[in-house]
Amino acid sequence: MTPTRRCFQIVPFIICLLVVVPRLASAQDTEKLAARIPRMVIDNALENLDIFLGLAIPIDVDEESLLQQIAFTVPLTKTISSQLSSFPLGSSAGGFSWTFDPALGTFDRVSDSFGPVFAERALTVGRGRVNLGVNYQRATFDKFEGVDLDDGIKVYSGSPVVFIQDSLHMKLSTDTLGIFGTYGITDRIDVGVAVPIVRTELDARISGLVFTSSGQFSDAPIERASTSGTASGLGDIVVRGKYNFWSRPGGGLAAGIDVRLPTGDELDLLGVAGSQTKVYAAMSTASARVSPHFNIGYTISGKSEAAKSDDQFVFGPSDELNYAGGVDAAITKRLTVVGDLVGRTLRDFDKAVETTTVFGSAYTQFDTVKGNLNQLLGSVGVKFNPFGQSLVAINVLFPLDDHGLRDNLTWLVGFEQSIKFGKK
Image (cartoon, rainbow, N blue to C red):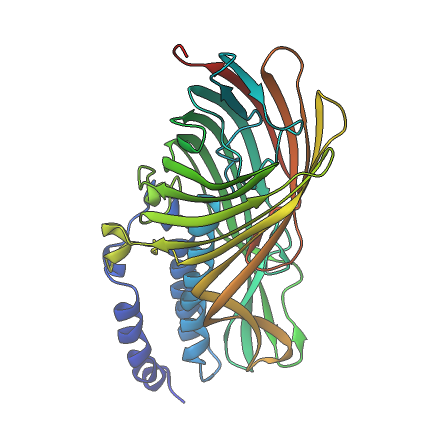
């Protein structure tokens, strides 16, 4: 087969490539983090095409494998944008819960426990009370669908005669400073706000190995491309409300709503690409010093203008089913130990599944399928009352499955203060 004939055979692929990736011909390096990895993968796929067209030996390039490299960026980019910017926020109720006694004119604590960190109790902060807090959370993501990001996510292109194994290595981390405030309008109604300040750091590179039908050809991986960047700024502000409609010792039943406003720059992975509204029910009770709790909710998501655009590498968030449950136990009047399960199901999500390739059963890579993405986290922590009406919280989150983007261990340190607002 002549080089000219090979060129004509690859023309349909080139046309398809230009349709799949709008404005590819004029693509330039951008400072926006969301576009860094997709553009690097796309440029690398085009370089692979040049390599195969320039080979002196006649081969039939598997065009689908080159398209697969580009299609793979969809679940990867969507997972990154949806998880980096929407990690679990702290509880809106805070650790102290009070009720006002009009006969005595005093506030009385209604629970010995300081409550969970990432779940909700049915308890409210109490009429005329304000809970103010700040916490710091760091997440360094280690795996994608069970694959270690240091080892690299494998993608293949070429033909069974000669093909390239590209490995995408990534380092992703977020530092989030969360500022919280909750005010008790009545003993049953709370309103609050959470303001996150986010720093996102990305470092990615592609290394490649050349294979032939007889085995590995190159002695060591060749560095193909790299990109890195950081972004800092305001994340997505969350406005909250909660109503305790059935009061019982330890809480009873409450209904709540969290509205996530699209104030973070989704193009720099500081926020999700659209607004979200979560409605939920919180159930909690108390037996001696042990307080179990359970939450169930649903999140309705919208799309930002960037997510609706065909030339941006961001995707609107999916609707979610949210749930959490666990136990908080008051070891002493000043110390509470908390254990929780925190889960969510991202509905109708573009997720990655491992499949075999035309290059042999030993060479597998991710393909894109539509379906629900289920994620479950474990949470263990303590809340300590050092003095007055202040609290210090220390907590760790850890994954209980390999679905999506995962951090082996996420730390949180927080401080909270409860104060009386106004006169009674």
